[in-house]
Amino acid sequence: MSADAPVAELHPDCSGRTATARPWSEAVAVLTGAELFRLSTVRPDGRPHVTPLIGLWSDGALHFCTGPSERKARNLAKNPEVVVTTGNNTLTHGFDVVVEGRADRVTDENRLTRLAELWEAKYGAEWHFEVHAGAFANGAGGRADVFRVAPRRAFGFGKGEPYSQTRWRFT
Image 1 (cartoon, helix red, strand yellow):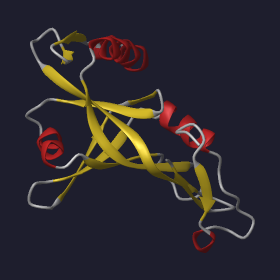
Image 2: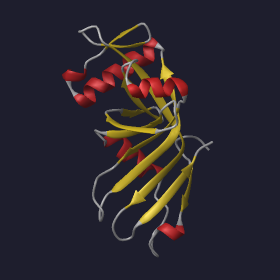
Image 3: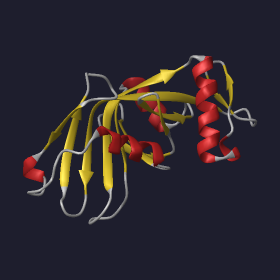
């Protein structure tokens, strides 16, 4: 089993009678197409912190960036465990995805260069980054550290008939 083929389990108590476990490919389609995500981290004092951000799915993981002095970066320095969510804000249609995992810094310059290209392709020239010293850099001298979240566990919430809750377990 790989990150491309996790074990899918339907939660019958949270799913309609005719629901079936959704394939991981549907979750990947949501993660790939999403423009906005919500990142949940934990502050050093244990309180939660949630923030919207942009990101992209590439090579079996979700990637996002943040300035090193931002709250989320400071939280990750103390505790890299995160939850990332995306989907839509409707009750009766759509598919929401929740990814649990560890946010690890990406510092390989070849990988960062490829991610910078993907960022600009997805979000446009406004999100053009150069790569310098193991991070994204913009023309104004700003720095953004890049993080990779490979799913350890993920959940999918199908909305509408039939409602469903699928859990994917990764090795």
